[in-house]
Amino acid sequence: MDIPPRTRAWIEVAAPALRRNYRRVARALGPDPWIVPMVKADGYGLGARQVVQALAPEGPAAWGVATLAEGAALRDAGVDDAVIVFSPIPPGEVEAAVALELAVAVSDGALLDLLAAEGRRRGRPARVHLEVDTGMGRAGFPASSPARWAPAVAALRDGPAGGLRWDGLFTHLHSADEAGGPGVDDQLRAFQAVVSALVPPPSVRLHVANSAGAFRLGARAGGARPGIFLYGGGIGPDLPTPEPVAAVRARIVRVADVPAGATVGYGATYRAERPERWATLAVGYGDGLPRCLGNRGHALVAGRRVPLVGRISMDVAVANISGLPGVEAGNVATLVGRDGMEEISLDEVAALADTISYEILTGWTPRLPRTWTEAE
Ligand SMILES: Cc1ncc(COP(=O)(O)O)c(C=O)c1O
Image 1 (cartoon, helix red, strand yellow):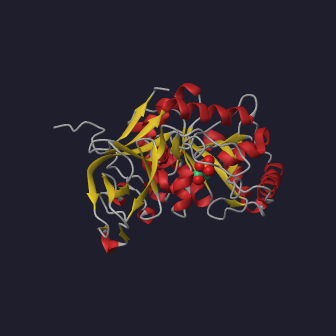
Image 2 (cartoon, protein in one colour):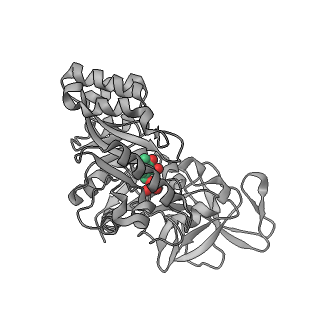
Image 3 (tube, rainbow, N blue to C red):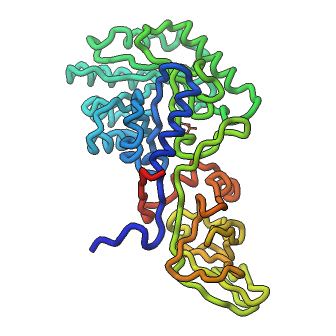
């Protein structure tokens, strides 16, 4: 039997807000922007297929994933647009990448050779975005020595006859979300030096920016690969704030009036100082609510901010709703998002949990249905 989607806990995702955030990135890049929305990690946890559906009308240049399996999942979902796999793929995935016509980011000559061989074998060139390491240090040909990788570039210049199609040249910024730091300009300079040394053909797309980079660099970014800003995560204190896109809600499943001295949760870390009213929320760390929010975080109930008391359990959390009349089982509590005039932002939760919005977003488990809406 199908259980209705909003009985326990769920994530509401607003497609119009996602599109508006996309358009803000597009405007920042200037006329005729080249944009690859990052839909890796299942669209930052919100559902890659639905993100693609919501953003397709905006006409992005391609979709960005991290792994071959994520690209294959898009193909399975009927997405036949350009897809780029950004994390370096292991040799065992070369055949599938070419078969599925997934473009891949390449950081070394050995992978390029394998792709070229597979492209020739299939009579279908492997699509390649060459990555340049300008300081991220996890992938890419080192920017400091373009001459050393000239042979790889020569193979790309051979074009389809050699089994390869050179689609892009890119780097990844490590500090674009930091105000005033030298990082972005240094990386851009290093990238531009590589471009000057290699002189790629005009058909090769240059792309530098993540979300923060798109706003910091504007048209200088070339193309952009925004992720977190689209999904409502902040990108730095001096840069624009995105519209919230996702709200996390849970049903209240129990309301209890407790006497002074009552305790709650493992370790009994919270004790009622006076008679209190507690609400049990049907969401816990098994759903992705960070356990460290116990005795630190908040929920919104009936438009009011209330503290989470005691440790978060795997399946439930408890909020102190003392002084809030009329709350009963079946009412909705908000862990991230807006309720009336109150809001708990993704970045507030991330800061409390001593992490970043990316980890909070991608941490929601499959227990929570993602319910997409077109409503404003
Ligand atoms: C290669 C690459 N480009 C772009 C992005 C998107 O970054 P952000 O989510 O900060 O916009 C990522 C994500 O980390 C990435 O790995």
